[in-house]
Structures are given as structure tokens and as C-alpha cells.
Image (cartoon, rainbow, N blue to C red; front, side):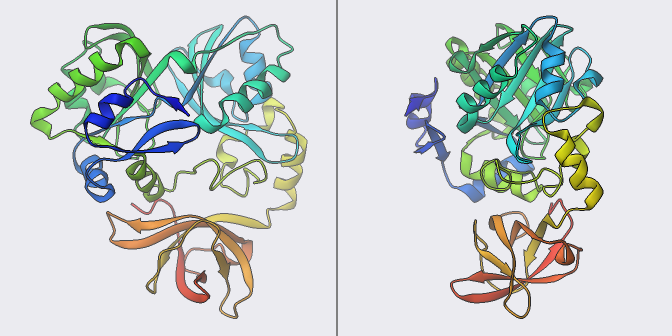
Amino acid sequence: MKDIALLEKHIALGAKIVPFAGFNMPVQYEGINAEHAAVRNGVGVFDVSHMGEFILKGKGALDLIQRVTSNDASKLTDGKVQYSYLPNEDGGIVDDLLVYRIDEITYLLVVNASNIDKDLRWIQKHNEFDVDIKDISGRTSLLAVQGPKATTVLQQLTEVDLSSMEYYSFKKGTFAGVENVLISATGYTGAGGFELYFDNEHAVQIWDAIFEAGKDSNIKPIGLGARDTLRLEKGFCLYGNDIDDTTSPLEAGLGWITKFSTKFINYEALEAQKKAGIKKKLVGFEMIERGIPRHDYPITNEGGEAIGRVTSGTQSPTLQKAIGMGYVDIAFAEPGTEIFIAIRNTNVKARVIKFPFV
């Protein structure tokens, strides 16, 4: 297992450390519900330094990105970010990722921790454009400062005007006395905030500065457990649960970042699927009867026939009810449709609803 730069800091704060995606990571501190509420209502800090970062540089960088990703990166300008995915050759998804345009020939790709090596090999395999690809994951730390009070806290530490930054944009600047910090108006919680990228050597300095600046805002460290409940309340996909190498991005609701004009890898198969119509769809649902849906639980119709499976589920801390996501046959995908989740051999009633839950 690999250690992130701030591991000892998390241990000192009483975090429960678990193995996750090849790293020792803090899953919770005082408890998932309390941490969840801190982000929804105030401000919290996630250490997500396990994520992967690649720098692509060269005249052919955009051509390579257009080939291996589904979205249209030609629409990016300097300082803009784009959500996208890496299509595979079988109609599935290698990974979902963020694409940052640093300048005309330089891009930063941010990928999931569990897929760093796989993604790097995949992009290198298709590098027919003489692009220099550097994996900087091992030397890069990433903190996500999320919640409605994030701007107030972080503005004390930089001259970059955070309140003027648009969602999915970024700036580089001095932060907490550290130069060349990438400040990104992104996140995985739906609660607002920023993500900060910097070299590992500055991790303790930046962490301590953020918590000092956030004292009056009751800032809290937040683990991966609350990150999962926060993203689920917003209907955000988690790679390995809701999307993977075998799932169709169109069935997963990612048609909005699937731009066929770019002629990405295997676009023909997805274009044909779009024309033919999808047969199943990733939907959100809330439990009507008592029970917590979990990954891979069967979804059935009223007669007990299998119509799909749960991909993510939890007790929503905000809503105080059980919610989930899962793939169902298209006939059962309409909001308001009653479905049933097979929980310990009992079919428990649920209802399809539109994303987001919160």
C-alpha cells in the first residue's frame, strides 16, 4: 500500500485509515454523518492525494486527447476544465476524468486512483502524436475544500479572486505562501468549493494554513466515507460502482459528454447504440419501504422478475431516507415507476426519481 504525504497528520487527528485503491486513506474522523453535514452546511477538507495526474505536452496534445476522450476538448480555453471519459474498444469506459487546459500545447488529466496505471498505459498505447506524457501522480498532493463556506476560508490565503472563478475553471497562483498552486473550482460533492493541486513537499504547510484560516468557520477534516454519501446525493457516478469497463456511457447518462464529432476511439459503436436506442438506464431511486440498498443487490419488478441491479446505495444523511442508483430495463426507467430491491431475500419497495436527490 502507498502512503499519501499527509498520512501521519490524519492519524494524529484520529482518522480511521483503510486501504483504498492501493493507498492508505482516511475513511472517517468523527463519523460520516457529522462530516457529511459539515460539508453540506459549512466547510470540510478532503485529502484526495491518491488521485492520478498526467501532464500531456506537445503540438499533438489536443489531437491525442480528442482521440482518447469522449468530450470535445477543442472547446477548452486556457484555465478551463472539462469532465470526460476514456472510451474503450468494447463500448465500455476505461475511466472518467477531468481535462485541464494549461495552455495551447499543455494539458493536465486527472484520473481515478485505482486506474492510474491502466489509464497511463491506455493513453500511451494511442499516442501516435509524439506527445510527451508525464505521470506526476506520485509527487502531487490534492486537497478538496468543499462546502458553502469554502470561498470565505480559502480567500484569506491567496490573492487570486476566488469568488469570480466560474465552475470548472482554474487559476495558478500563490496559496498559503506556496507558489504555483493550481486552484480549481471543481469538486465531487455538489456543495461548492475548490480543489488544490501542489507538490507533496508543501502538503503540511498548506493543510495547516487552511485549518488555521477555517477556525472561525468550524472547518473539519472529511474522510472518504462522507465523500461517497455526498456524491451519491448528487447522483455523481463512481468508477468501479456505477460505471466500469463493461458499462455503456450512454446507458450511464453520459451522453452529454459524448461528442461524436471528435471521432474518439470506438465512436462508431456508441453512435450505433444511440441510433438503435438504449435497453437499460442508470436511474436514481428512493426507498419507500424500510431497507438500505447496497451495491449489486438485484432490482426486480412487482412479480419478482429481475430488471436490473443496484450500483450504489446508502442512507442519505441529508434526506434521512435510503437512496440508491442502479441500472434498470428501459421500461422501468421513468421517474415515479415502482421497483423493488431484493434485500436479504425480501423484495423491498422503491420509487425511481430524477437526479439529483439533493
